[in-house]
Length: 147
Image 1 (cartoon, rainbow, N blue to C red):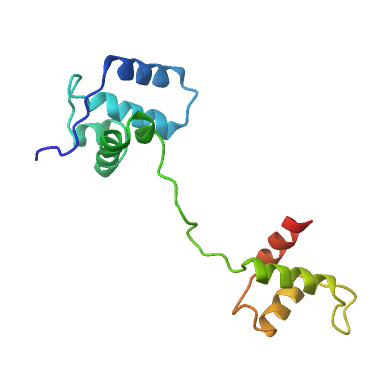
Image 2: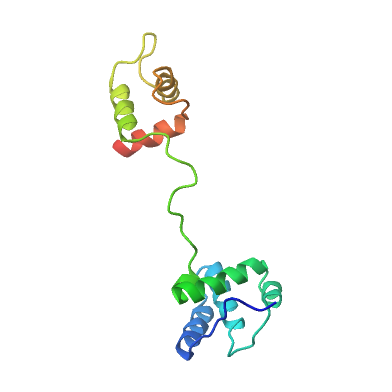
């Protein structure tokens, strides 16, 4: 199968990658990505994706992705991981809901309680139908942010 993304390293890039590897001060995945680029270089050893994957204990798709990012984004893009634009789970509380939580925690606790607990705040928040469900840990983190 013909490779779609071909890695052609300049002498400067090759030298920089060798320094990157030899120092051993970087994260393991970045060092692995540097090895992948050096082994897939057209002017270098020209290993296949399968050989590289076996040599560095990674998946062939990883080799493909590193080559792709190098061609598209350059050396720094290939060495770093892709960062998410949005978190994997959407936030339960927006600014208005956070303000209502803080106001609720500053108010008097229900009868029979001397103070608000995190679980009590979470259950009261659900009773008021501000959110469908909420964890006491979310309440804690929100209140901790505000000091």
